[in-house]
Length: 446
Image 1: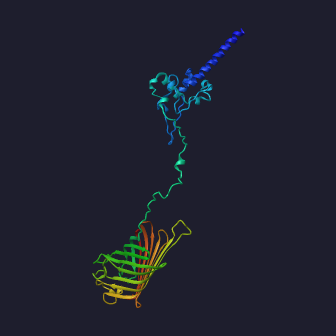
Image 2 (image 1 turned 90 degrees about the horizontal axis):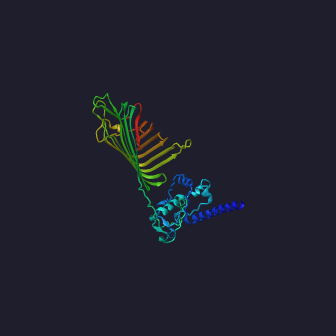
Image 3 (image 1 turned 180 degrees about the horizontal axis):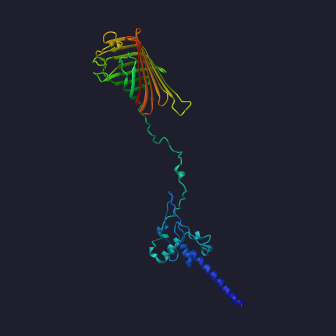
C-alpha cells in the first residue's frame, strides 16, 4: 500500500518538475508568454490607460509602427523583442500572481510580445527584414537630461569679442534751438488811472496774450529770442463812431546775442522792438491815438548779460515739484533809444516825443526779468526796464501772476506800471501810469 502511494507521489513530483523544465525552456527560447489561463489574458488585455504626457524636448517613438526584424535562423519559432525594449522574462510570481506586487512589471511588454507572436503564428508573409539584413553596429541612444535650461543659459566664455559685429552707435542730432510758448484767451475786467495812453476805458473785455520764447546755445554763443503780443479788446457802447476801444495793444520783440565770458556772465548785445497792430481812435471822433508803427520804439545796447537758473527741491514734500528760479539781467552802458510816429496822432507827447514826429536818445539801459515757478501750477513773472539819457528817465515794471486751475483754464493777475518824465505831468498821478487786469479763461502752454 505504501509502495503504491509512494509511486503515485513520485509520478506527480516528476510531472511537476518536467512541466517546470519545459516552461523555462520555452520562455528562454521563444520569448513568448503562455496564454493557457484565460483569466490571466483577459486581465492583461484590459490594461489601465495612463494619461499621455508630452514634453517639448521629448521624441516619442511608437514601436508598433516600426519594421519587424527577426532572426532568420529561428524565424519559425523565435520572435525577437522590439529593438527599443530590453528582453524581459516573467518569474513564477508574475505568472501565477499577476494581480500582486509584480503585475506592472509583467504588463510592461505584454502587448508588444503578443503582436510579435501573432505575426509569427499567422502572418509570416509580413516579415521582410532579419538581423542578417542589417549592417553596421548598433548606435547607443544618448541619454537626454530632463531639462535643457542648462544649455540655454550656458555662457560661452571663449567667445572672441573682436570677431563679433558691434552695434552701430546712434548719434542723435543736437537741437541748438529750444522753443516754448504760452497762449491766453481770457475774459477780463480792466481799469486805469485816468492819465493812461488810452484813458477812460473801464469795461469787461477780451484779453489775448500770445508769447513765444526761444533759446540757442552752441559752445560759447548764446542767443535768446522773445516775442509777445498783448491785446485788450473791449466794446465801447458810448462811442457812436467806433464800436470798439483798445485798452492795450503791444507787440514786443526782445533779442539778445551773447558770447560767454565766465561762469554766468557773457558779453552781449540786445535789441528791443515795440509797436502795436490795431489802430485806436479817440471816442466819438476820427482822431487817431495810435496805430501800427505809430509809435515805433527801438532800443539797442552793448554790455554784459547775467543769467541764473536754479532749482530748489521741496524738502518738506520730496515727491512734489520744487521751486525753479530763472533770472536774467542785461546791463548796457552804451545804448540807443529811438521813437518814431509814421502816422500823425492826436497827442505825440504821451509817447515821450517833445518835438516833431521822432526822437533819438543816447544813454544807458538795464533790462531784468525774474520767473519763479512756485509749484507745478502757480508761476510768477516780473520784468523791469530802465533807460536814461541822463536828462530824462523811462521806467517800466511788469508783474504777471498765473494760477492755472487745470491744463486749459487759469486765472491771472496782471499789473503794469510806467514812469516817463517826458510826458505831460498829471495832477493826480504825476508821471506814473498804472494798468491792472484780473482775468479768467483759456490757457495753454507748450
